[in-house]
Length: 228
Ligand SMILES: Nc1nc2c(ncn2[C@@H]2O[C@H](COP(=O)(O)OP(=O)(O)OP(=O)(O)O)[C@@H](O)[C@H]2O)c(=O)[nH]1
Ligand SMILES: [Mg+2]
Image (cartoon, rainbow, N blue to C red; front, side):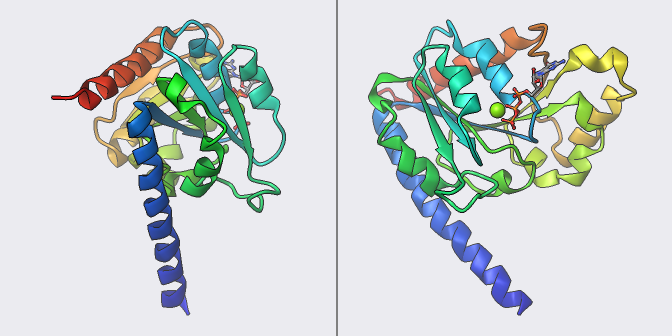
């Protein structure tokens, strides 16, 4: 029974990867850089986007994944960027992540030809989103200091599969017994040397580096897409 289950899961992930490749082809055609933004609920994904998307200097769009509601999409629509809300409940059975097919279902409504950067804010969850590629260029995860230093050890896949870790809410460090060095030690144990930035969406500290990182990814994407 156990073996059968494992095969089913592998089949689901294979099917997901096929659709992710179709998404990738659409993004390539449109020349769009896509960032998959993931974290536990409340780590600060939407606030960090509010901080960088206004006046970014490249044309951005956001795909908001939530189980229910449009609270985050409403917040980001105030920045006058195209935002599409994807609800996994009821449309996709209340799933705890976005998969390639859900993203695909929303692409028709996103003006890909008119944007350079698409940020996909995934459903708040440290487990499931790590398993599903959506056709993205880069995976960024937010780990806030209120979550504890042990999270890389408890959710290694999420920390291992990302290209950048934003350590958020550092404005709160003075009020916590969180040991930043210990967190970074655990991070390096599961993903040695992964790029990381210490940020506060509240005070804006480190947000410039996060903005520059996004701009560099867009520029890199444009360079690799340019005809030889
Ligand atoms: N002190 C402090 N609070 C923050 C910071 N970033 C976010 N918050 C607060 O944390 C709460 C959650 O932030 P959100 O940006 O909604 O988090 P999220 O990851 O988008 O949450 P979900 O989409 O529900 O998973 C809000 O009350 C924010 O104001 C920060 O750097 N410092
Ligand atoms: Mg959010």
